[in-house]
Image 1 (cartoon, rainbow, N blue to C red):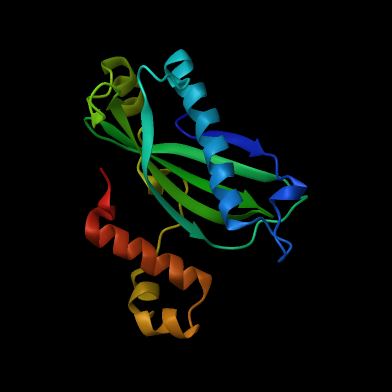
Image 2 (cartoon, rainbow, N blue to C red):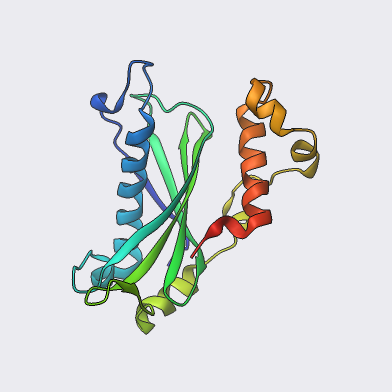
Length: 183
């Protein structure tokens, strides 16, 4: 089974905002659709949402790199980047016009519905996820050069002197330094 799930996402006319690109909140819905498709593909019946064994999103980290337009095909690449005792991280790239438009990560946690607390992932689910887990760099996420991060300051970000690539690089560097705050 391929560790990277690929799917084409439908961009609806109603997903656009007044700026004639997909609204930022609608991008989250597109990510959800890509994640559900990937998890169902990877886990089969275990990937279908089940209130008796809920897995919930506890964190969403999202970088908008360029606008997404209505019309041209939007492709999603989805992979498992980390597996923990009770959680796992799903990483995404949304690609349009041959360029990455969005990079994102969600952390999902297995919950005990009786207590509302996290619980260990079922052994069979964890085994599949661990087999799928791949380093972000191995599945095509662009490497962020140290020079780009070192030459971009917080002041650049707040004064508008930074490019979207600079913002993404600083965001990625901050996540790497802090461990990303993931469960």
